[in-house]
Image 1 (tube, one colour):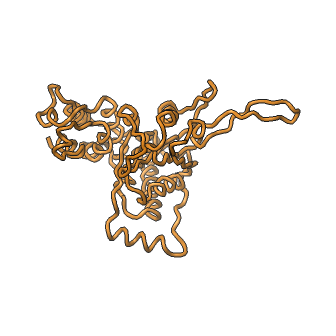
Image 2 (tube, one colour):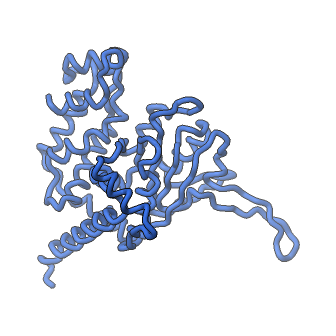
Image 3 (cartoon, helix red, strand yellow):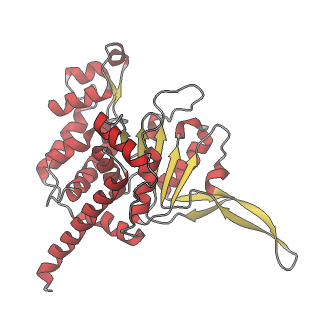
Length: 327
């Protein structure tokens, strides 16, 4: 094959992998196409994802199925009020050797995996949340003064229950900003729920096949950097983000009246990266404004903070973002 054909062949191979990931996911997950697409975008961008939804919407199944398809090691951590940082990252244990001597041996915690489901992250104290957030940001853990690197790829999908707030420890806005996406999972349609019943209440449930491995996932992640981001798309991203900031030259009266804090520079970076990844998933040769609009909600939902006026008038953060995009 000539060198001129190599990029085209590589692009075709990537599109085949993406299409097969979607097919395998659909064998297990009914509906939720938009949620699956957003989770794949987050994964391709090496970004951690916050999943918000009521219990029973298959959040655990979604993440474990992705791990199965992509050939990644998957661990689930159930966060509880008594969970300690060492329960996540591991600890040094004094062991007796064969010769009778004693030495400390590090026992790895469940954080040492490629795909982590941090279930109900807001049910554990800030100290334990901070241990997880260090791993998310630095891709390492520190125990007894010694740092240990985590294997790549390393992605955290954390869940929150939007119903119960008693006995929870809400993540501060600064920590929420560490999440690449905030994805809302809604109830399935009646047709999808009927299909769920048929698929899951029989003797045998369909299983997804493994089609990639860690190296294949890293190659897909690297490929997102090669998707062009035209200048007009960059300018659109900057307009959206700057107009979200109240009491600036770019802000409208609506934003000044209903927003406390707008999105920071990390939002611009995330919009750019997510637009590239979404274009790759859709088989497009370059990112467009359409991709920016489609990723704006999960990127900005936890970065634009409405004020008391918005709360009192029933204006949600989704309404604010919708207004930003419409303007």
